[in-house]
Image 1 (cartoon, rainbow, N blue to C red):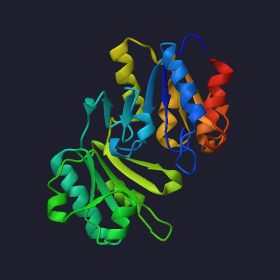
Image 2: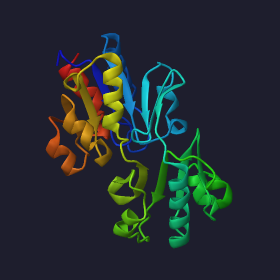
Image 3: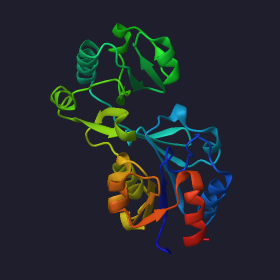
Image 4: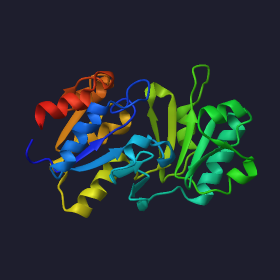
Length: 257
């Protein structure tokens, strides 16, 4: 794998174990690649405020919230948002139709929700604010938590979101995300490739869920974890061991080090 110049690493289900910890061996293997001149990109559905502290000391790239924005050295490289009028309509539509279902928005450097249940806001890292204040905020991503006893009509939801947004469903249907149409983990990688003069063929991407699908399919080498969705495994070039078995560490040691 001599031609790899950039490595894109998903977090949940990939680098992070099921208990949300990170294997030190995996981190050491990743940074061994960085010492060889390979650009390290952490590419995640999480916003920056939920990035594990262990990853914040090496000045790497972070493609965040499924490609809606990118940070390096505390500077935003790009930042895609849903238009104000559209975001206001989404909030009003969903909160009126699904009063009891939790949703939050990512805006600025924080997560906000107007849900009535304080404990759910705390559980999902959201600051509780009034709806009239929520609709005034800019939105990068609108997140619905689809718990087991919920029913959400996805077809109706698709009819009520703006044309320049899209729905992304991950974690086996638990997370329903509305985000700018052209934002994805792949478009984030493409941005960084252009910045560094790198072809997609020179990128390796690790992932496990449907927000990783495009990246794994289109980069030079796509690696699915053993715990990945079957559809992700089908389009991957390699299958690594699972996240709970330090798959990234073993893959890097075998193919690079």
